[in-house]
Image (cartoon, rainbow, N blue to C red; front, side, top):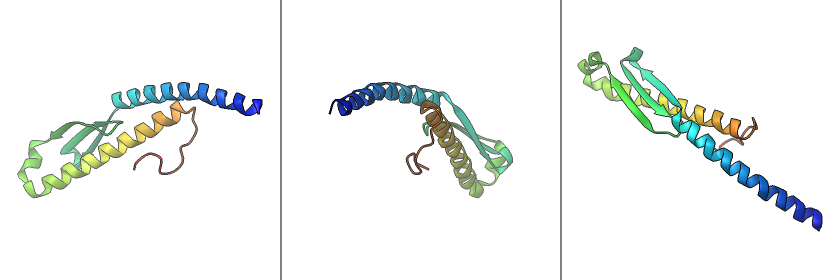
Length: 108
């Protein structure tokens, strides 16, 4: 019985460290900026590792074809958000000491 209590106390002690590591990981991911582009660089979107779009740049050349502008923005945004998810995954693995996460734990 005492062994189980000892294991429980050890786990509780580790929980605090894991929580601290995860908070640091989120802060690093928030500062990490990734870029997605489309149309050969006509549209560029920058996002961070927590899924926030930070900037959108549209080359004036892209404005000449308004029908394709929406899909270009969507493609660049999706590329940036994918990069952000990858950054978040890297930060999470680092916070967990290189341990892989189970599939589906993070979105995307």
